[in-house]
Image 1 (cartoon, rainbow, N blue to C red):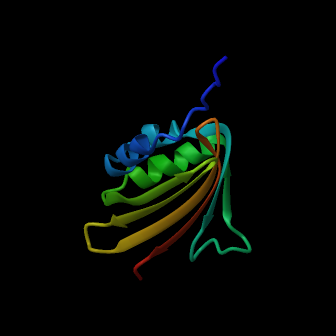
Image 2 (image 1 turned 60 degrees about the vertical axis):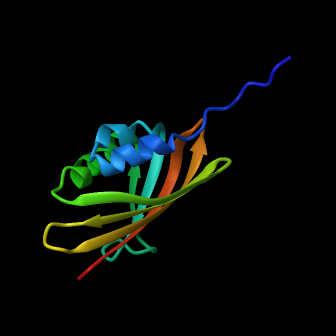
Length: 121
């Protein structure tokens, strides 16, 4: 009798999506009922921006990865049903952005993510 293996998180799809600016690839990593909380200068911890479901998350991903800027996955760590990753970005004028994310997984898909981002001002 064998043990069914649970699907794992696709770290290479994460890297491709981020570095190749492919929002559709990134969106494929989210469960239909996923929730994304964004904390930054404008949406601070007491009132984060909260996106529900793939439609809302997809709009954000299309906006961010449609911009004229570079994106690089710096580090990604998967441990059981959790993933953490760091992303660095740079606009053509030299302004840099750093985003840190921690997410919970279900069946290899992101179901809950908190992203904290900071940028040069």
